[in-house]
Length: 483
Image 1 (cartoon, rainbow, N blue to C red):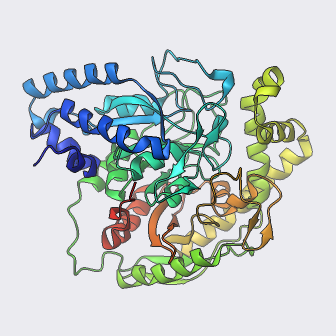
Image 2 (cartoon, rainbow, N blue to C red):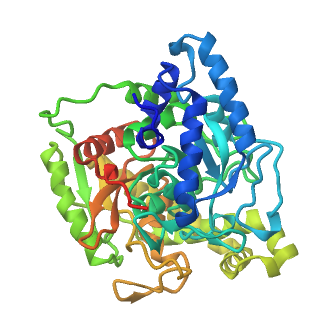
Image 3 (spheres, one colour):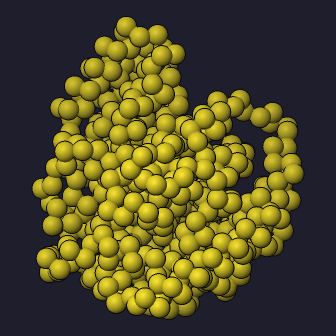
């Protein structure tokens, strides 16, 4: 293998780690390529906002020393793979701003669990990537670092809140990223940037430390350029943590077995027997831009060619908006009420609105939401008794102009709030089900489109297996942006 920096930056996480373990390339050479790529493309996309080069090279040197004395099969799965982390995830010794002036110089003394597990798996931390303030909204801009731009069209949004990670991965800065998702923050940026993003079932990747250990709506998960790399990432991220009392319904062993599976015969029908329900409007008349609907219907035929049965079907999601809106407001107020009370003038108005909405919730509204969540659970359970997967658009809109705070209309329909345009993701969040966004190709104008696949709670491995079959058959993410 050549150690040309461009070649190294094109590799998957799996292949990059294998090259380091086999001593084909050193961790320091990989880091050289990583930082050279940041220097080359980050001024255009503004994905990476903090770098720790000295610390990263020290970690790479330690990795190379370990490589020299350790058999390859005893090295960790992501040995020597560089990664910037989401700027809302705490990183010990690395500035973590949450995209807010309130925390502009904040340096944590601990790692969040998702960062700690990636580091334990061999990842070399190199800095932080951009987010919207406090991860609120699906467009990555803030007063500290400005706006992250879409690598495929730098006049457009990269999505959010994991937009910096998605743009970095699409730009070939790094092959993997850590993200989080309450109303689409893993899935929307993946769709906007032509990569994959996975929101696991509750408890699979615990979010620690946590102010509310019983919170269920927000999730942590990975982003990558392929479902193969998502499976590899989940093989090191999944598993319970005693600080979070949620059961883990999909353990690390299942993801490890999935990541180790050999590619299927190209002539095989790997989705034979898989039953897929297709919906473009979630059964609720949710507006979706026509270009996205066109791509979705065209790509549905690929699933059929792979052996799946695809028919129009969708769970009854009438209660999902109430469940999501109330739970989000409750969680936002619980997490940020003190920040808003003490630093209101420094916090963006969308957060103030969401926190005030949470503080105004009545006991009756909370009881109604709990009952609605039970009805929704029963409706989704009945759907997945018949269907294995739900296939929908990931996002209702194509990447929108980056100077906009959020889309004011979708397919001609006015949007009233900064979260309403994300219903294609938030409706699924309310169900609690695992969901993955995979690249579905491009519109005639060259903008990426994501497809959202959803499965029953705890069926995370099976969901990724279905998504991987499609991803391997299409390889849309291999179409790199020109930066």
